[in-house]
Length: 32
Image (cartoon, rainbow, N blue to C red; front, side, top):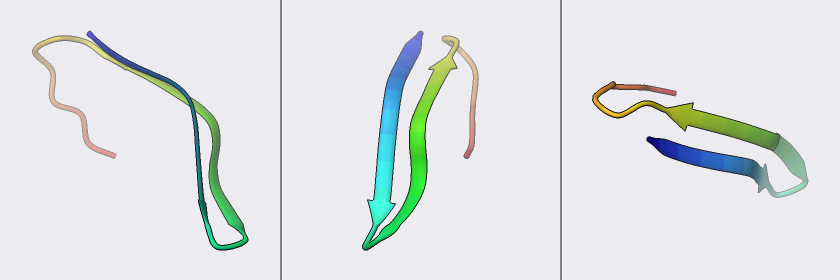
């Protein structure tokens, strides 16, 4: 399992993602 927690991404002054958590189970394909 892959777990990503509390991701934050901004582009210049624009906050695109704030406090995002994602869990992907083994053997699955996930696209964003």
